[in-house]
Image 1 (tube, helix red, strand yellow):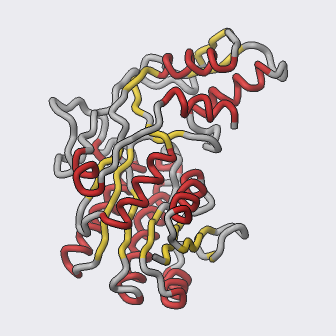
Image 2 (image 1 turned 60 degrees about the horizontal axis):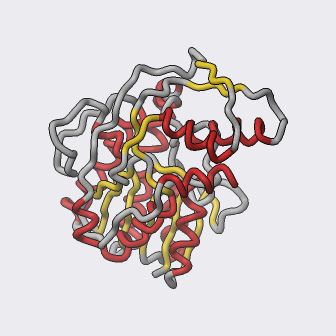
Image 3 (image 1 turned 180 degrees about the horizontal axis):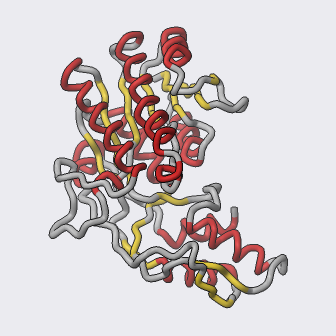
Length: 297
């Protein structure tokens, strides 16, 4: 298939391009930077429509958007303009100019919120987003599924939990730890590491497993379906730090930074049996390997 990958120059995009190409697909990378095959802003209605009309895609995996959660509180309008408006522009362009194309819109498991649940969350369960980023992603997710119901378009959504891997921005906790520890191990900074709340419990899936899931879904996922993607393994942030310290071979002084501290919480567990049933996906890369690769990057 000839597949448009939006936001292809971001963290996940590089891994996804390799995954798709390795399985015989022609990948057209979209982003706003010169490294992309096609440059346009998904917030631009005309530019998005023009690109889709000219390039005759068979499919699209939509990654583009604002991924930094705190930005939703500082720039809520921007968050909605890009993550909701941009998604609608893309869906409308495909509906009009490539009506038979398959489209996978990537949202987030954060749409379910962080409230405790008595059982793992299935895709049809109640969504209770508790930040602006998640609200915007929920709007994009539901619009995508609504378009399938109303127009019969081959549109689907993926709702991944946290994913990590080499090359992720140090704005996120795991690569932030790894960066600080690399510098300590190399003697470039004092043996002190600044952290937030180490007792919160998180689930992390390797980005390479996530890329494989997106490839399998664009090939064989069921239009109109939403898919949870998760590892099923939960660890504390302290465990992550301890494992990275072990990999780095250092024992730094741990300093809690009030600016980074958040109340202790645990993410809800996701049921990802649907993606396992429909396309045969399960996570394969253990978190220990992910952490070693992140530190070595």
